[in-house]
Length: 422
Image (cartoon, rainbow, N blue to C red; front, side):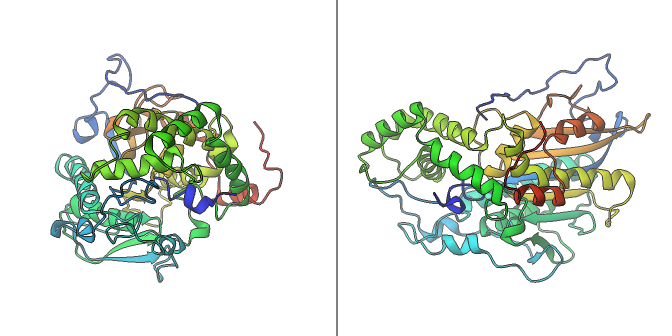
């Protein structure tokens, strides 16, 4: 069985092509007729109440190098943090206690890439990408709408990250950009132990998911079309037959090199599009979105958490009534199944610093709640929603197929049959 800690979940950077349905024009006669920036306009029909941002970390060193080809030089100077991304922060567990052990990060640091850096580390380029994402959020939620305070306030903003250095540093850089290094106190970044993580498909903490996924991972590279192309590219690159590679590994190294201006094997110039396509084909096979249970186990607890945050805001039951923004620093392998569950996966691998933003609005006249979802700053029309401003009941119905409470998730994870009602 392949090592799932290495192959998926947090470490990677369906074939149901939902497509990304971008909403560019609304029906002027609709109750939802308004411009995309309405919530920043005091006279608009909608009042912004809550924002949740789920984002991928920034550019990083590769998780593995393509074997038997010219290796890039991943020198430590590529990882130097820009001064403007520095803030005072502290990493804790979810209760504010000491940071939990980080077995994933420990596994990275058992290896060293050519040039002297560890695998999977956030680079200067990646830090700047998240800083820029923070600036974009600042423009929208501080400068244009005054929705957030201009200085970090822990009562308003909650920051959670997977317990991995690159996502923690990405969260730090986003906060630096969002608040321009203005914080009255230390910024808490919350994490949890690996076995209870919900910010990625948790093969370590969910037995059933591990069973289902191990088979799918092993199978993904042996599918006829993928296997044929893999054999061809392996030959073209001069990679020995005994070396184990796959398209996700090749893509990971290729994109990391290109992002940092480091040389790639010239053969990849003609294979770039095919590598991207086959990597997506593989991950689609692994997540198998046509089977509800797979996506439930991958993102069910996270979906439930985001819905709970929405209900808490509307019902006034949140332990932090002033909370306005939830930031979740995660991975490509978090965003992909979330996009699948929302029905807006565009069959393209999420780039570094990609974000899914979920806004809760309240109609000023009817007080009815609406949800608006954007992906990389583009508003999305969620299948099952009557508009970009999606009535909350419709949004909850869309997610009801995938959302799992903690108790139900644990029950499914520990079940032998793993069967759920269709």
